[in-house]
Length: 97
Image (cartoon, rainbow, N blue to C red; front, side, top):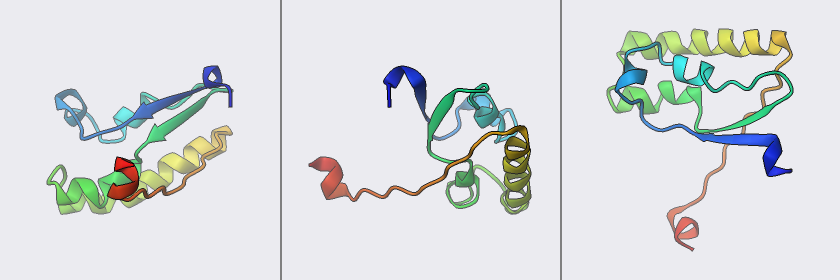
């Protein structure tokens, strides 16, 4: 792919500004406009395992996230957004290499 045709956006732990908004807000801010491609390095699914383990959300909040994520993805799909999700795991040895 031509690098001019897409944007890669890394997502890490929420910062102070992001913590003052709904957790999906930071993803809404980077959803590409029509005809554009954004590769999001990390997922909104992090709310369920990662943010709950690291204490960024309560049990009620991470349980509610399942519904909220499904609703957001359905809304994007209804608009015509193609969502492609995949898991890429690279072990520490490969990362160092």
